[in-house]
Length: 541
Image (cartoon, rainbow, N blue to C red; front, side, top):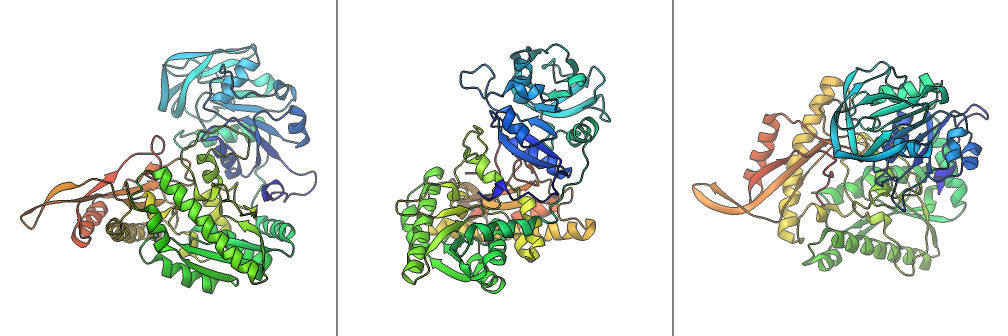
């Protein structure tokens, strides 16, 4: 894996580093991301990493992530108690606070009721961590267990009506913890708290940047590959495009880009993908027309995970066929490059950091190889978040229409069609989705003109249509109809780990609805999904 060395961009002896110990929280990787946002370098390590190994990494501070387990469960994640004796500042969130408390002699118990979502904390003592934040403020909670008794030397600094120890600290030992999640955007002053810890408590400087990251990534790919060949799946999305540009710069014609057309892409997208990548990349490009094979395999399949498995397995079969052709042509492939990013790994429960995250959904590019496939993997983006990938794409010279392309799942429209996939449903969804994208592309463009920011306060990060497996009664042309509804999904986010539904103007929603009903045969109703993530996910399946 390239990640081990890809951030070695500092001068010897000058590196400031925060180690994030991962206890398997769905939000866990966000902590490292928020630290990077503040221009301090961070690394993820498994929660049970020995203290000696942590010290060998020469960290400046340690942060303990949250996690889904109870600290008293038989298989609960643990931590080496010696980390609290290293003399390093330590900050814990949620499970991280609980494990800090029980390790140091405190007590964790069940609260009368859990807290999930926004909660109001009240400061009850002075606090370095909460400095420059209001005495009363909203934070994001997600817990049933909570600290009931703090360890000796600790002071309770804030509480809620349900949770008596919303935060605690022992300033003498530089140990700090919160029951809530400062790393989540819904905690309004979370960034200030992280700044207080990094710069106030730890005395770090905001000196880390990604300026020289591309050169290091290119060198890593080149050193790893040597003279061998690499095959890459190009979907036309941001992630695979950035990997393609990176590998093209590193190894040129040693790279073969394969576009597997499963027939489940958005309207006109196959033609756009081929045009862009045959012109943008100086590499071999192979367009695999697999539409009919996928249609046969998916016929009558309604379970979303089964659809994902079918699509993922066939994806590898198509790749294997191309790789065999290359081998027979005297160009055997050793490496498979993938656009895997952090959220893919987290949501698949396939954490490379040793955590124990629950599986939310499977991803096509994380399904094991079928029998007979023996590629070595190259995943240069597997510890990047989406907006970091976009920044890399811009730095690599990719055009905006690629870098800012809408996120799109590998299984394509198959998981935006609830129930089985048929030609009729595909046609309806492609046409409805095209209207959603046209109108919200225009809406975002207007906001960009007004603000000069790609991700302004009210811009949409991702938007698309969903076709549910139901019908709806309606009246069109004085006649009763019984046709399909379309669900519009639009969210605001920066990294796909959390998202809020986009507060679109009524006139925009009205135009989308009017156009879909008028222009898409078979649709008589449009509804808008206003569920944040969590508790929902961005996709429906």
